[in-house]
Length: 341
Ligand code: NDP
Ligand code: PYC
Image (tube, rainbow, N blue to C red; front, side, top):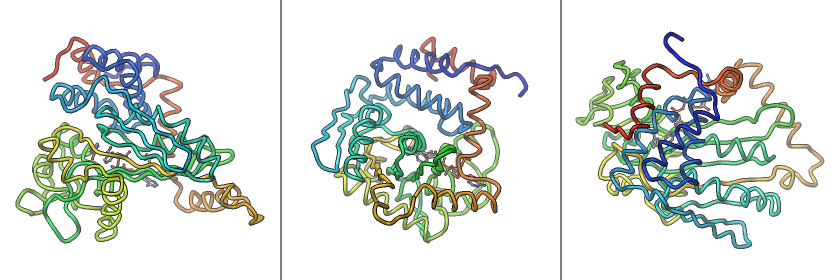
């Protein structure tokens, strides 16, 4: 890569955490946010990597996130664990609750984590991958802000509402997928705008409802859901389960609360975790082995499992450091000096 430098993962985490702390974020959330941002960059997920750091600082400056919020976990004894993020970053709430969710899922066979009032800007795969590495299957979802039109419509009503799934594999990296229920994440459109490139066809409509390939027109208009009516239905399910059911904001309200869609929104998130062994008990079948049969056959036909690209990118980052462009390095230098555009 021309003009790029390689930076070690731990060094980049420390750098990002330091920038957040200079801007007033308490060490615990600053560490959690730095880890999720650097994980995105490490794994080649540009839309939710360093690209998000400046937005985090802007949201702080706008007073829309609580930089010193301490997430509060109410674990109780049943299958539902709750974390009130207190208007702080979702990643801090997740890191706090992760051990309790793992323990409760193993104990009961399944458990749910309901996070409320969190500032959410991150990818969901770190959560389901963590759970899969602990031997659990899981589903993670959240609303976002209303920037997506339902199938057949042109007005923003749904969020880009991500949906992720993780499945543990006995001798391989977990099977993980994680995608926006819009054709692509809004972050991808922002990257096209930054790079000055056109969007592929079918991603978006402009503010008048006409199809557009121009990133700014798409950001001012609406993205479309993937898979026509099917993506719209899944997106609506996420609004209902991770918005209405949690008693937290749905994407329309999150956009109103944020005063637009320029900065990441505040809402809730839902993570469901399952112990496959508990479910299969008495069947005489091993879910791990059955899962492998399917996953190997899938990989055999498609030549590419979801997350395979990510794991390959991670291997290179772990061996050689994360490749950062001269522009990314300059942004880090500027932000280290407190410079926010
Ligand atoms: P992509 O369309 O880039 O990727 C979606 C998934 O499909 C990934 O798991 C990817 O694996 C996999 N995949 C891609 N191509 C193939 C292929 N040819 N064969 C098999 N699997 C494939 O993601 P999106 O743009 O939809 O979303 C990007 C991120 O944005 C997600 O991480 C999501 O969580 C995040 N997001 C967060 C939001 C929030 O509110 N916090 C809102 C919306 C999105 P791989 O990674 O290996 O390429
Ligand atoms: O990329 O669509 C997106 C997104 C919304 C909130 C965080 N990421």
